[in-house]
Length: 179
Image (cartoon, rainbow, N blue to C red; front, top):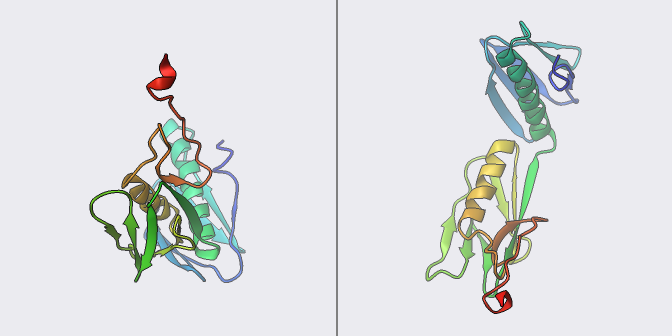
């Protein structure tokens, strides 16, 4: 039995769930999310608790069991508290500005980078060297953060670039330190 899959998902107050034809819809204060549940997995909702069950102990059913439960738990957390990724910008002259719903990045190129916020994502710039990505969909928050980081990933010699908050960059010695 999957240890993650067999755990129930508690539905907090103010969260509505609906299961129709294999589509699970979860609505909460931060928005609404949909998930197409695999037809082999059985999802039951009773007394504010959601459970996922599998038909057999086959390897693919065990994998789907834990995955489905984790996706549902992330949806519940997303519509109640939401998700956030913090990015740090390191480098002389590197900065970000809030511009409408999106941001403008100055990352040492000859041009600025305009990044519009996708639907369901809120981009915030509390300081010139920080970008906050917020949203209710965990996958989308991570994808947007990865795209912003991809404009100028941190380089190993001076560590300049866009990095996740708390990310450790492995630094390399330059030419002079080699001898």
